Image (cartoon, rainbow, N blue to C red; front, side):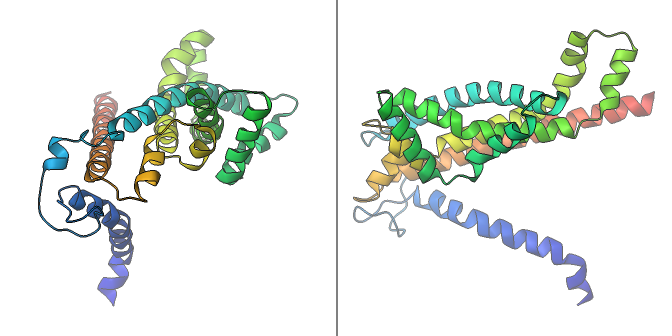
Length: 269
């Protein structure tokens, strides 16, 4: 019992991680499967044919590339607007600030089916064509709230004495922002952008309402599930997961190296 009390947090963490990663592991295993029928739900025979011909099924790579394109465009625009809104809410006092804070949280609290149907009604009323730009605008409106919240949390956690020290050393407001504020906020902005891209890339409900005849990767999977999801979809999903994992590890390594350099500089001084 004493050993269990000492290690209970670690045990719970391992169980949670297993719970989270078992479905991903199943998808990775089934990406090397040669299914007997059209449904790839049980492992039949080991094969790398899906990896060798990952675009072999019509529509898979086209829908995947379309989701990447929409996700990148929506993320860049939403990150710019969300960062500016976060700075305004944290650093300035203006009329309607409390109402703006409330309105920022509404898209996060609104069910996606309500948001998607409302945007569809808006686009139809103003005769805006459904498709690429309608989905991009809808994704920007959806993910900008998450980016504002993430960047705002980073700004509120900053030590204001660092900027005060910069101004005490006669740095101009532009130099303070460039060399002090922006580098400190940048990790929060990058994290918010990654979150926004993930939300945009895997969104189905809002996209389904406003896509028209356009087929993104989640919409393709939804349609393919009715007749059997191709093994290439499993391979692409596994590839995205491992690329995301590599990106996270690289960022963690860069941050750890930067932290060691800072500690060494402090120790030498």
